[in-house]
Length: 225
Image 1 (cartoon, rainbow, N blue to C red):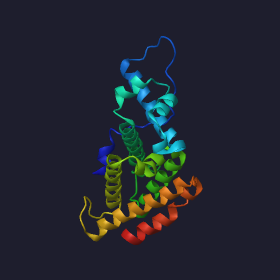
Image 2 (cartoon, rainbow, N blue to C red):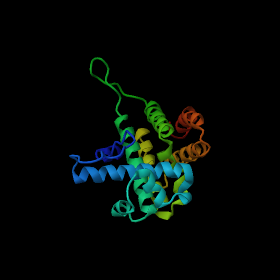
Image 3 (cartoon, rainbow, N blue to C red):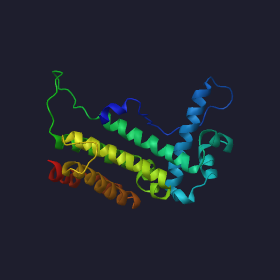
């Protein structure tokens, strides 16, 4: 089940700052984790400004405030850093969606069944809002991935299948692939949403991005409701 895969998803909520100067009490693991997060964030921000092709390792380490040696201790190349930033962003998004899956209990502590359309709307609204609030990481997944090579594209396709599984579960249709019509409809919905979101991100049209909610919900109902 797609929701069961979220337990270990990272929740990165704030832009990382530099480590304290001088002596500090951080462990080696904490230092490495801080450096890693700064480099992943720098990768997203640099590629938002300059694109994948226009971003060098030197630009990433300058923005992250780390040495070239530190970069290569954690990443094999710019492409490897991009793929790991892509994974961090998509795991974070998946975790947020998983948190929002269950309906909130009422004052009596009970929950009522929610129609699939409303579940889909709630998750779609969170998805669009998150992309609008974090456009640098959104562009990694939806725009710059096309320039990052076949491994990055394969990773994106894995995540699109994952989202199709989520939609199949919401609307209670067959999941896990295959040529059946409901499953194909889930994959087509994900592909259409990705294309529409990509167009708005590429144009820096965040208002239009948020405005995709109603049309995509109507499309989902026509295809799967």
